[in-house]
Length: 236
Image (cartoon, rainbow, N blue to C red; front, side, top):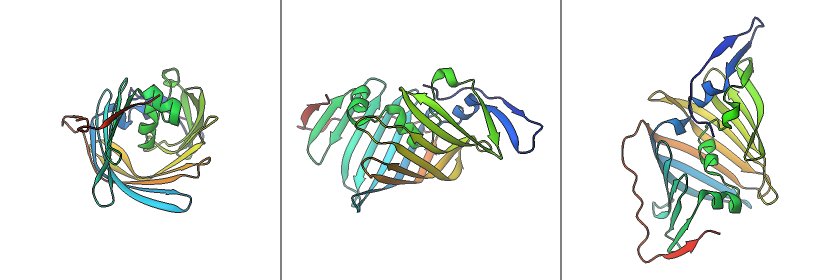
């Protein structure tokens, strides 16, 4: 998958129409740099019931991710450690250590590791699409791609070079996922959406993520400590 490369831009004689290259958008992906989202507020609604959580996310390029989720009262509920070939989750509520691979996470729940970065506003495409020309009309581009054999639609703000809307086609047991990104903010050379809205048309799930505090270019370390005396569960 593509995360960060070079850029190129050309203009058209037609008013309001410009052309860009896909790699100039992936160059702005958060997954191309280290970061620490210190606090993100999460609102999850399903069946007319809304739950509130908070999370922090640590990431070190090329691919080491640690996500910590806490209840509204600040009690840690879960901690997930993810690399290209490893998945470890401390489920503190049920005292379980869930272990497996990112591929298992995708096959069972329809969540690919790249989906996590898409949720943060990254333009995730196949390497073969890096040189695709994007025709921007009045500052925006819309186009369809194939990712993991499924259709993905993007709407991109060509001035910010950031995704503003994304649509991920579902499978037989997973719904279509729509995302909307807003309230963009510049942070240490990166443009970050502070509000992300997600909806799943099969489950009726709706999620709103509000990023309160983040450090781009973070240089800390990532450690994962398995829960003491937790039951080990293998993701199948």
